Length: 163
Image (cartoon, rainbow, N blue to C red; front, side):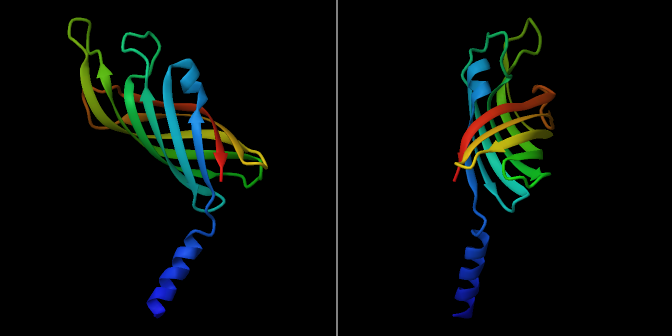
């Protein structure tokens, strides 16, 4: 009985600060025809973790597009301020990405899958009603593949909701 009470107490205390957010990157959708959805859960008032999923909808021949056709990005954010409306953050992320890359002009596109490790910085606005707008930029480096791009960008302008 004591174990059940302890487990129940641990579960309730871990859910005590359970602010969560869902977001859509509107800059990616408008500028480069890709969809990026994000989910973020706060651990404390200063720390959160989340995951983003990017799906590139642009044709491979498009002049301006991400190399990545798909990218799943788990991330950890530390917020430097505890202001109720404006927060600045630093982010560490791992980007698991796949796509096609042109090695040279004579060979066809080559598929790749790789994982990037990187950092980003940004700012977030949170309204009293729960509307969220955040902007961030950063870079990562692919670690394993020889056919993958060396640099992986991480940039966005998200709009979402906190619940």
